[in-house]
Length: 176
Image (cartoon, rainbow, N blue to C red; front, side, top):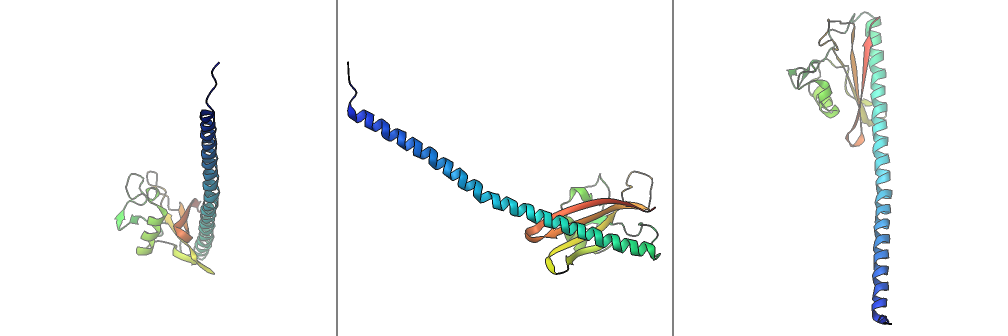
């Protein structure tokens, strides 16, 4: 019976140890990577939630303003308040148009409302106490293909937070 040389067995042990160490190193690097990205993801979610809360504050402010104007007789319907253009071109309320508001990012819409402050309720209105947060609110005619009805519309509220975080709320409102 032949016996293996002692040097060969020692070499096999070294290879096994190197493979085990490489595996443990890979597992360790994966764990470090996961623990570092977790707080970043949580921070992004927090920023998104803050932007949504700012959009809700914009909705509340717009609702108060519209209620006051309707109650005092300043307006009787929404026909004079619709925003219809983007970058000076029509089509913001037309789903077949490239300028349709749902095809545009929140950042693009806010920049356009600030640049052309016509027919908006609020244009990049800062939150009291913290100017890092602001809301933009405007109305869109929702009757593109239907029978014209000036007593209902879409109220678009866009909240902006730190690090260019945005959130949009679309609410259909109607007069009784």
